[in-house]
Image 1 (spheres, protein in one colour):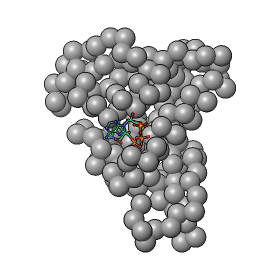
Image 2 (cartoon, rainbow, N blue to C red):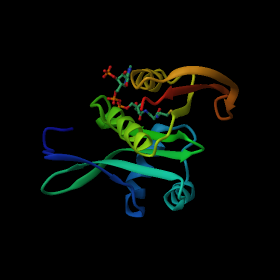
Image 3 (cartoon, rainbow, N blue to C red):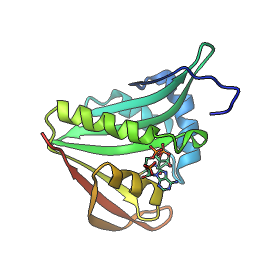
Length: 159
Ligand SMILES: CC(C)(COP(=O)(O)OP(=O)(O)OC[C@H]1O[C@@H](n2cnc3c(N)ncnc32)[C@H](O)[C@@H]1OP(=O)(O)O)[C@@H](O)C(=O)NCCC(=O)NCCS
């Protein structure tokens, strides 16, 4: 956060269609193959999908700093997307969103959480380990853009 910005509070809300321009700017700076607007719109319409974003609010403006998209399906929470705006990384926002996913999964009596992550994405792997995820498998050459493997991670949820 720059010194000029004086955000007085942080909120985690449901994402809506008006957030998409900011979300897509974060998406483009975060991933080699960013999701399209169409994919985000489908997620917003899906009844299985939870789409949350962190907003930083001040008297004068409100900015989207991070977002998470996950599905609750077949007694599992599947993380589909998570990114933090570059200038706001390292402030615990991704951890807060992972905690929000965990709480919603628990409220919905889901038994476990799962995700896939690029094997080179050390920051994300460390985040997921901090949230209790462990590597349970590998999908070789899963990401076509970089021909990287995906690590499959799981975390059981304690009742
Ligand atoms: C991965 C990402 C979501 C982390 O967001 P963040 O808000 O900066 O992370 P947090 O500040 O909540 O950090 C939580 C934990 O993640 C890990 N972590 C985050 N950034 C890290 C870094 N640069 N180096 C090592 N570990 C890091 C640490 O374990 C950290 O806990 P700690 O502060 O106690 O050490 C962010 O870097 C990002 O948006 N990357 C691009 C998109 C992406 O890769 N998404 C994940 C797709 S699977």
